[in-house]
Length: 541
Image 1 (cartoon, rainbow, N blue to C red):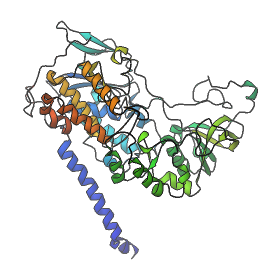
Image 2: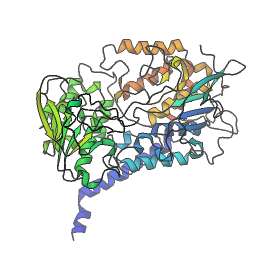
Image 3: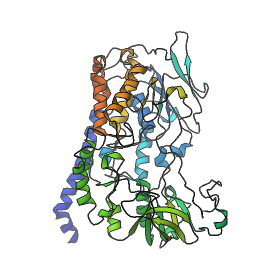
């Protein structure tokens, strides 16, 4: 009887219709945007060029799939073993998932998400599926760190790129997809045992106090559900999380899911706003076209404060606006604070003691380091939610990034201003609000392919620097720098202007925006009818 009542429940009908529509929309996206994969590993037989992709994370796999589907040969270089396929997603907790709705996180048009907010394993599964479907498995060089990328010239004065002193044949272009998250970042405080975090050079400068050391578990947030942390380590224990960004919010949720008895978050700064996990609300935020705080930004901030932060208004950031840093998209964390499952302490961790964390507790309107009240927060487990180190790009020549034109101040925020054939998709990113998907990964990749195919569309170094300078002027005074923060609407404006400032690029408009055309056709030209141009690069000084 209960099953019949449940079947007749109108809400269940609504949910079923929603699930069908959710999947149907994905198939429509596939039909419109997905470029055909190679039929076998031997394709493409007549490639238009060769591209080196550095990094086998989400962006690297997507970029390589876009390249090969448009008849370019690729080789992917990945420093990790096969287990590292997926980049940062292969190193986070199994409970880690998308903050954005998965419709806004389509890193490739061929995805089929099963859940609105998929977790790590589903994300890795889709990355692996795209990797195999687009014949990228035999083109991936695992355990092959890139140590050098050098420009080499041929007899005509054109140049190509040599990886690791010629380990592979030269490439026509390089896509750097190392992302913004490298190895886990560990901070060192007095009272922390030596060697914690795999670094014996801990900052224990006050040797007279080293008898007062925290000897209980100290874990990086990325390890919370790893095999090295047993269930008994967390269950029923008092857990103190140091850090209030996305990693800290996720650490609180993971600790509670693993049965922590009590959780305390120590927040040096509450700079990151927490916003709704709602596809419509998040999309409207991303539609702000100016990429900075504007006079009417208080409207969005007021909505979030009065609705999302209701009951915990004290957690609203006091010194930063919503459009100044990447927000944390999360519905559960504030609810945990409201329900008393997580205690939020604003303050500076001074040192660890044998019983916990000595903290300089501050008021809301104060800044890190301001005078406060010293309190020891008892702990049985300490979690360092301190994020990840930013990967280095030292394998690229410094001349590609002259003074004032370094990450993120690049052409279209992703191209070296000295050479358009070096693309750093998502590797220059600092902060932003927007979707994270095939739209911009594919667009940037296809801009590169367009510049390879059509020498008339290529920008000169002075033009690329001028673009950066204009953005700096338009966004002067923006927090974090002119290109340190952008919205998706702003990115779209950049792409449109890329076409309309140069009328000779307009014929590539539908290819760049939607991926239509430019496939192999008996080794001659492109299916779209766009005339092919011999790949040749001008000499760059």
